[in-house]
Image (cartoon, rainbow, N blue to C red; front, side, top):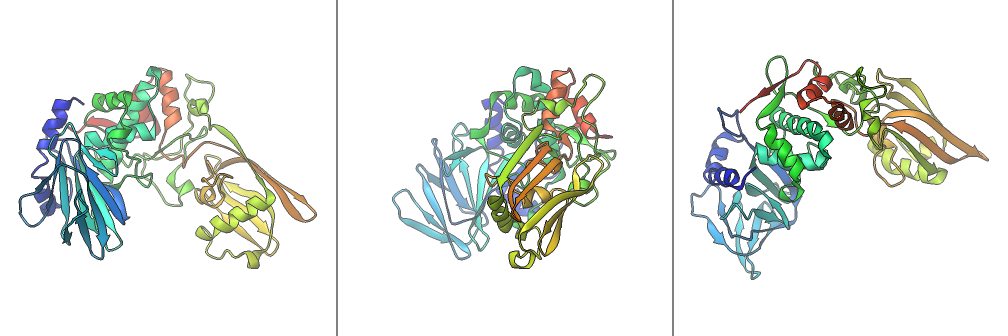
Length: 418
């Protein structure tokens, strides 16, 4: 996006807070209008800092008073149901129970929240547990801050995959607007929704893809934006939501084979995580289960179940992901299924298992104890919807972003909303 376009966007946001107070969130865009979204950057923070290289202003949302111009960094700390405001000298400027808003005086110098820059403006309020910071931003600038973190800056042959990612991120956002309305924002800035890093995350190739698809959205048969789930590597076959999350999904979220006649192997076979292996020492595996199983199995208790004896796949879903994994202990069994497997069995570095498409499991025992556990698998992520490395493979084989989106979201169409 050009600096001129951004400057126009930010100047149009100045009266935004009164509109948000009346209507609560962004609504459908008119012709040529870019929707506004509210992104939760911090939830329950004890303290945050705001500054801008070109000066900024801060005010109270519901008072109608003129905002205060600020030329330096200010701190905001949580206190009970309100916020304490501290200026650059360390002087307390007030205790505020109202929502605060902040905006840059010069759009070329966006606000910095704890040293990370964000376009648009910020809202600050207390949720009782701490400070909530919300970035109010136009959808296109938001997508430009999402795409680099979700798919990364790729070489030119993968340009269509980046465009597909931009459309998927835009579609997901519109479909999920007001998802967290009860908490004061639309979406979170984490992988609970989409990873969003603001200005510092932006990358030239990704911004170019965002601009090239401006306003383009994937829609269902009723021309509504689709909930465009995506993940890194499907491992050769994407999954339906029921297979990994245990709940039905929309018709466009079907599990599909990740190939066409143009390729002999899966499109995502180019992924470094297409095949993977994890190995644990027996004691480390048992300790890992003690930490993670309680979050997935309410009845888990080491004294009740005893030591691990074996681990076997009892059943698989249509995509060959594990639907029932049985862990046999000395005094009982525990069953895991779908995506819960990834969070219950964590890698040696503490991260979630890459996928639940497990191809081989080995549990080695000696003198009645497990001494080594090995798991082989395919893919990375939940596997629902668009496969990012598969999209890259399709791009390299001549498919454009519309082809990619229609391939992974079967029955969907691609339209320009604004």
